[in-house]
Picture (cartoon, one colour):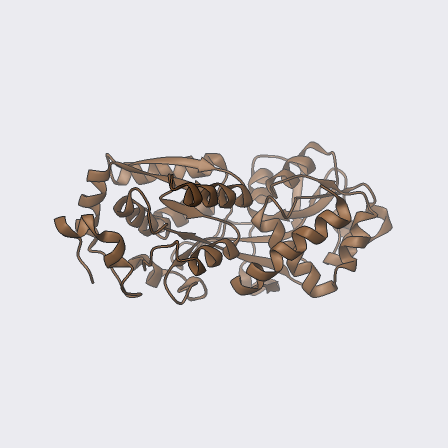
Length: 342
């Protein structure tokens, strides 16, 4: 454990980067974070409302430490922080993408601080030590599955697996996001290519899908009844259904895509101590309870999902590695543009 002394506050980044086992004394860390006064959080993992809720909960727990939330899609956040690194105008203290390849790329470029939150050890085992080197850590979990508008599709008629989306009856009825803007969508596209080859999307293109940007756009389009079915986030779909919208989900028999999303601290973060304290908070029981209310997956074993969500033991999942995403997502973005344009 490396306590943050007065001298350590000034040298926190190099000290904490020295060991994968670095642990801050949370009392000293909180004191140091209060002197910094706040942090800026770039997040694609949460809706704007949910991100603000998390920021307010953090400030309520640690009065005087304000969270400035910048909510964008994953790719936009990644491009923004890349420009800040290039121009040496870094504003971001905590970077939360839905695309782990972003974290892996920044790690390989030496742009992240190594920090292992104490709370990482308290997560459900499958979420712990997401990066074995300690540069980025699980702070959100979600699923991509099939969603549909219940006013337009009966449960017995809904697609049962991913290839079912390609049936002719769904022509001009499908909504999807764009892999160049959404980490969830990029991961889903790569996963479908791995399972079924690029011909899956060549067939999908013939169905004239409505293409948004964020995967959240799929929920919006289905709620409005503009399309009937789509590849969607379980979180946004179930949350919208909870609000009375005509939406339901189908867990595909060939597997719902499990997406583990990570957060990282830039090595040159303007508020490094506040950033570390916030990383601890993102893995806390408090945030797990906020996540479950928003229909995200709970990272903590003591926080169970709301009624209506299936536990992992009841359906099949599959997952990609960060290395697969780092190499594969740029490839499928180009393939997507070649096939769909834009």
